[in-house]
Image 1 (cartoon, rainbow, N blue to C red):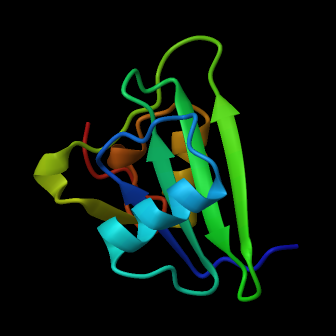
Image 2 (cartoon, rainbow, N blue to C red):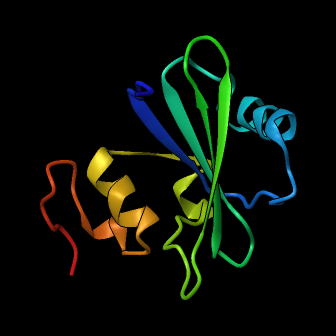
Length: 111
């Protein structure tokens, strides 16, 4: 199992043709550095595809997810270039649910 201590969401879209090196360069540009045991999430412009770059302390993993219907509920850039998510928010996000309604303890804070 890959240990992940922090999960960060980039608000600017990423070209889904990007490979590990391009995604890593974007992480460094947006977040300043790729820290060990952190995951960095990116979406495409349409919001139906996501890439996740994970730095496990030794190297990087690049994963992709596509929704066949609907879109990911992504943060826009009024939240800044990046947003930190809790595990519950990530689970909602990858399922296409509105993660912004969940607080850090799984509490619904916005209706």
